[in-house]
Length: 243
Image (cartoon, rainbow, N blue to C red; front, side, top):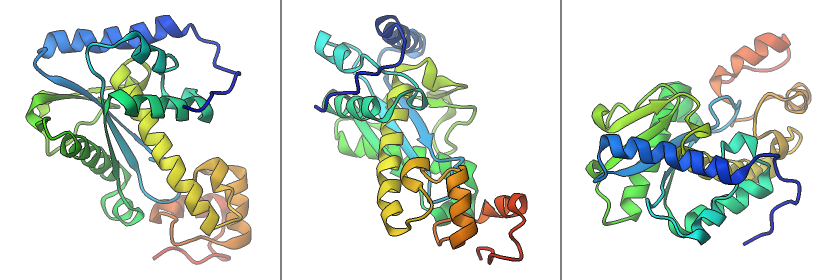
């Protein structure tokens, strides 16, 4: 496993991990310990390019000291630097069930980013169940970050939690899996489309990204709702709008 950066966030990690795990244990005790508690989170809703990526993670209810050490820095993925996220993602995959779901730029355009995000979460959960042959969807209770639940799954087996990636261990783990998967995807796309600084901004509307648009125009990977950015930059006369 790669060594994480020595500059770690200034948090009391043992107490934070304990709080995340206690949160999920309390929900499992309420909903029924016969369930597998699966956390779901997505990454890329606010990006200007490509699709949304969802992550799904089931953390075993009984963890060894080694497992807890691997999860030591578990938290909302947005709060963690890349070296620690990458180390966590590798650790999570060693003893947890994991699924990743990806939607395309076209699906974001056709469905809108909200429903494309739910589709990414559905695909992530489906992949988790498919990879783990002994896991049936009806055996799982889903924790989702945010306010929405997945339409095609029974609502009684889902719970949406606002800012859940900061209070639930399963959702935090899913956010890390999703972010590492999408960041890796965007870094590869950045090699195909240099000049937009995607390898740093991951497609979000940073000054470097917007400057790249001014100089180079838009790409086939830019979403149709990019029209809003056109309006902000007053670029209608200079750049063709995506079809």
